[in-house]
Image (tube, rainbow, N blue to C red):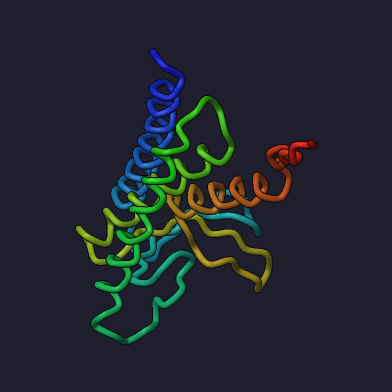
Length: 170
């Protein structure tokens, strides 16, 4: 089996794992926690909550009163999936943080798109807070997207550029 084929299988597994973890965790929250209820995990810091987010990641645009919002979010998700998929397909060499990042982004985007297509909202359930300060609730798909994007940024900032070819001397 070629390195490219092994790489593609590896990154497909990462994408599938991110999607599967997202689906399973959302399903468990929907099954076990009533809408708007929560379970404290670490008092004063973290709880599981069941929220339905009609907006984008971390609650952005959730209060936007437009009927076009859902269609726009679905269209943007699909438009984003195409270049991420193409980049991942083209960069399927051995192990690369860029490709791992792309695979995580792809799995996370597919998880949230799944929710929007089927339920017209995304289930969020991870809530971190300290006193009156609260980070917007999010889900595993959002986490996969953020970790994937962070891997891309780290790779861009700290990867060694390819060696420059020196002009031939006569």
